[in-house]
Image (cartoon, rainbow, N blue to C red; front, side, top):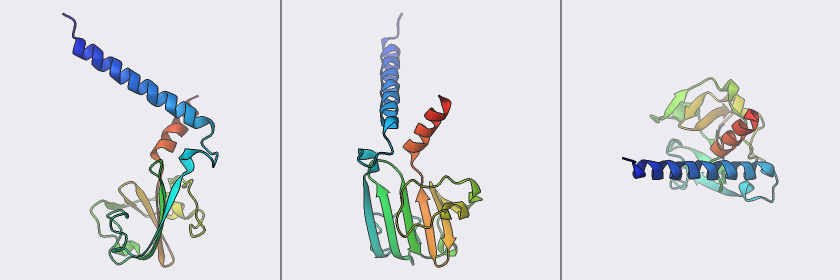
Length: 155
């Protein structure tokens, strides 16, 4: 007896995979063109962590101030700067790391210190966090970009 549910499921999964592959290939062509939708961002600034609680990740210390963030609206990537310290990171999702192999963000801002990501000593979920002076710098890499880079490397 033929299991039609299994066949339909396989066809649906194959179609979805094909769609993702085609979308990734199409996005790969001009992904660095600033006119493309991939480059759309939002900027947030908050005086305190309390002011930005609905937008900021939950690991941001409650005593953080002078917070600036850029969010890629068409993906996962984010960069964040705040006055605080790694000692204030008291969240179960945060752990010490050696950040020497952290990929740099593709987002930029006048307040983002170039290369600071390689000084990351803490990872909070998907976020890499580095202390530089009185500021914490954190970034969440683009998951879609990582997939595209892997596809490109495999070619």
